Length: 154
Image (cartoon, rainbow, N blue to C red; front, top):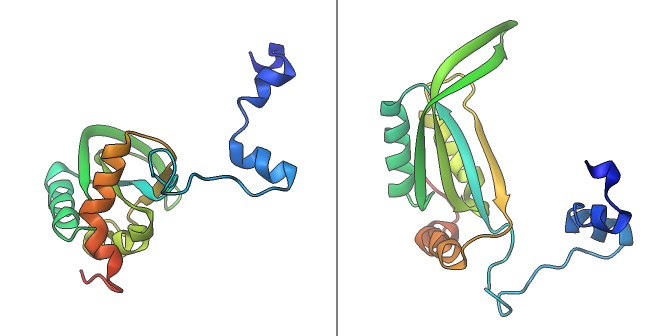
């Protein structure tokens, strides 16, 4: 129960960014030359839901081939409950977890929207703050040639 924790312990639960903002100083991020060399937030995990495994595999293969993603995990048989056009819906879907550079999320989103069968495709991305440094470097390396170019064609 957070209310029972001493004040100092509760401060450990507050994200660094909020503490930095409260103190008026910018959040500190390690430079590529320090520690692991990973810049927090430079890799993202994007999530896309698909109506079935066939669609998910087609999109997954395409984003990896186009180097918009280093890896895509397909998580089958999720249940989504949502409101659509004034009605509560419940569907079985496949969740794609896509690892990419944060700078590629707009291009990834545009591509997914261009090939996805849904009227409004779910594409959301969260920055990766920490993780296995060799893996995060691999994600950046695999997708590097795309981030260097100015456009990505579907």
